[in-house]
Amino acid sequence: MRAAWMCTAGLVLSCATAPVPSEAPRPSLQGVVDGLVQEAARLAPGSDVAIAVQEVGTGEYAGAADAVPHVSASSAKVFWVAAALRDVALPQVAPRAEKVFRTSDNEASGEIIDLVGGPDAINVYLRELGLGNTALTKWNYGKPRWATNSPRALGNDNYFCAADAVSFLRRLDRGELLDAERTARLRAWMSLTPREGCGGWLGTRLPAAARASLQHKGGWLPPGCCSDDARYNVLNEVGLVTLPEGRRYAVALLAAHGPDWPKQAFFIERASCVLYRHFSRDAALDCGDALAAAGGPAPLRLAPGEAPPNYDCD
Figure 1 (cartoon, rainbow, N blue to C red):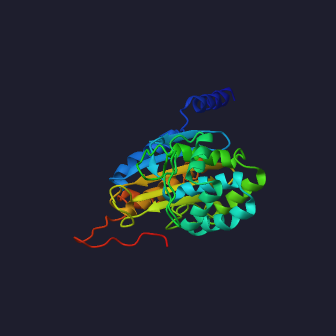
Figure 2: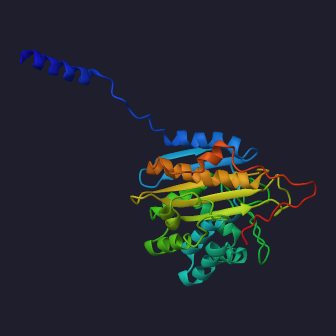
Figure 3: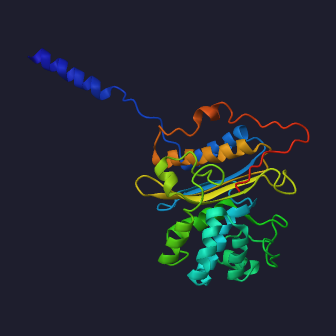
C-alpha cells in the first residue's frame, strides 16, 4: 500500500509540475489596428488609410493616422443632422434627415445645413464639440453655400478625421450630445442606411445580428465622380456597432486616393470585420481571410481611355 501511495503521490507531483499549455496571448486593440494598417499596404496599395475605434463603455481606444484630415464626403452628414436636432424643432428635421440617411440625399443635406443657419453655424457647432480637425467648407447642392470660418485644411473640400468621428459617435451613444428622444431619433435614422455592399461596407462582413443593428453613415467619392481621382477616390465608414452581449464600439474607417476601388472597398469591409472579431472574441468569424491571404480582389485593369465602372450607389 505504501508503495502504491508513493506512486500516486509521484504522479500528482508530476502533474503539478508539468508545464500547462496556454493560449496565445490576445493582441491588444492597438495591435489589431496596427495589423490592419500593415494589411492596407498589401490589400489596397496606394490608399491612404486612417482608423479610430473606441469601446463606448470602457473608453478603450486605438487609432492610426487618426488626426489626419480626410475628405469627409457624405459621412459628415451625421454631424450636420445632430446640429439640427440640437437647435431646430424635430418636425422640421425629421423628413429631411430620413432622406439623408436612407438615400444620402444631397439636396436634403443642404436643407439641413440651412436649418442650422448655414455652414458657419455648422462649424461653430463642431468647434463647440472640440472637433478640431473637422469642418464644412462648401455645399452647393440646391444652391451655393460657402463657409467663412472653415480653416480649409483641405482647400475647398469638407473634411474630418477618424478621431473626431469616433469622439462624436461615442458621446452620441452615451447621450452626451442630445436629449434622450433626439438621441434615439438620430440613432434610428442611422439605421436606415444600407446594411451591406455599396454604401454599407461597414456591415458587409459582420454577422447578421450586428449587420441588422448597425448605425452608420458611409461616404464615398468613387473613381470618375470628381475632378481628380488622385485627390478623391474617397471611401469612408463611421458608425456604432453592437456586440452580442449589448456592448457597443464606435469606429471610423477612412480610405482615399487608392487607384483600385474594389481593393479599397474590400479593405474597409475586412477591417470592420476584424475589429468586430477582436471585440466579440469570435475567432471562427471569417473576415474574408482566404481572399486577404491571396491579396484581395484581382486588380482592376482598364484599357487606355476606358471609363471606370460606375461605383456610385445611386
